[in-house]
Image (tube, rainbow, N blue to C red):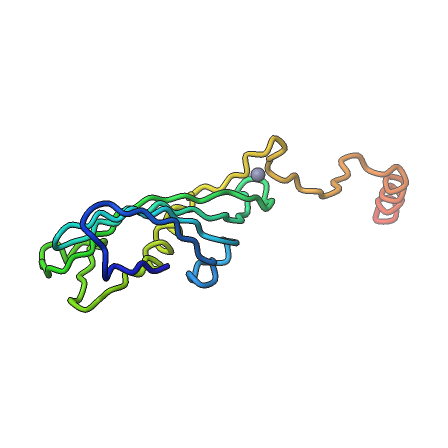
Amino acid sequence: MKINISNLSEGVHTYDLSGDVGTLGLEANFQGIVDTHVTLEKSMNQIVATIDASCKGIFICDRCGNEFEEQVQTEFITLYSWENDEAKGEEDDFYVLQPDENMIDLSKNVREYLTLSVPLKLLCNRAECDIPKHTVNEQKTIDPRWEQLQKLLKQENN
Ligand SMILES: [Zn+2]
């Protein structure tokens, strides 16, 4: 998921990029293709990239334990600069470009932000979603035959 910035003029540029989850190194929960809409705002010394990314995820419902599909969506901003400003460099989404660098690679950030966007509580929201009932056959009433046997055993013991 790379953009060539070598001949980028100043101003706003938009891109629609997509990449395979495998190529992006996303975890197994994600499936298929990651779609992104990227807006680059180039000024003299920097490029501000606004990235909107989404991908299909397959999760296990926390409540009913069934598998369900959910679209994971994220939006983030990364700043690419040709100036090495140390104060800015401490921020996560600040990237210093080398003078001869002509490609920006969005893959790592797309991967990280999508992973962070997975909800902490995963619920399928299906109508039938419920905590599974334990299917243990608890016989509350004693089988009459057993009752007879128990009586006999008691008699023997006495
Ligand atoms: Zn559920």
